[in-house]
Length: 282
Image (tube, rainbow, N blue to C red; front, side, top):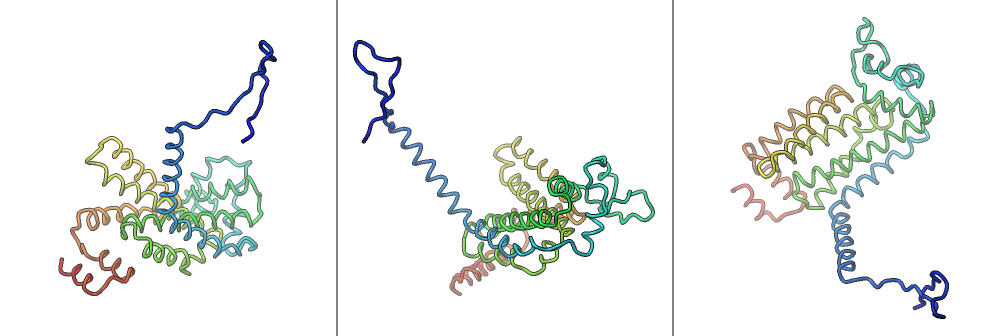
């Protein structure tokens, strides 16, 4: 092995100072091994989410060449709330289409966070449709991966096979086509993103509230803030509060249909009929 040489301050007493790289200590080697093992564990745990996210992105990559369609023109091309010259606070006083909420002709659809995302698209790419479609594609990919993680941690206890099936079914379901391919459908995708984040935050609150009170309270307040963000993306985001309550009752306390998700997991993992009968009798 060649030793790197570096002359420091010339010669001292006719001797040339040579720099040798320090040999790694046992603690540093252990730390590297531990970090690598942690990274590999995370990758193994999240690989269904990664696969689903990639599939979701590839499925709609052809939309990057699409133009604006139908309601996109009114929500983007003629919406003054997207213009950098307009007052940014005006989008919190106007509806989704840029009409003041107090106007008699207002649609009354209040989605300021979605309009704010359109404004960012307009700032970076003006009226280029590719940027808006790219935003929808990335959001759908993120939501699909997040749904897969939620299914893994909530319903399938980390079992990768049913988790992957559930995630792929969600990502490839044709019901998402209009929301992803149409730019105005971003309201649905953005609302779904905050919806899932709020639900995951509430799930963490329920699991940690008896162990650590203050961190658990932060998760609870975070869940409420994310629920508000989902509502401000699209009106139906308010339903996350009801879904959180259903989760609390059915999954956390097992008060209703305690074997439903066990049976579903058994079917998707092809458990033997004897084991399934054990689930139904318990």
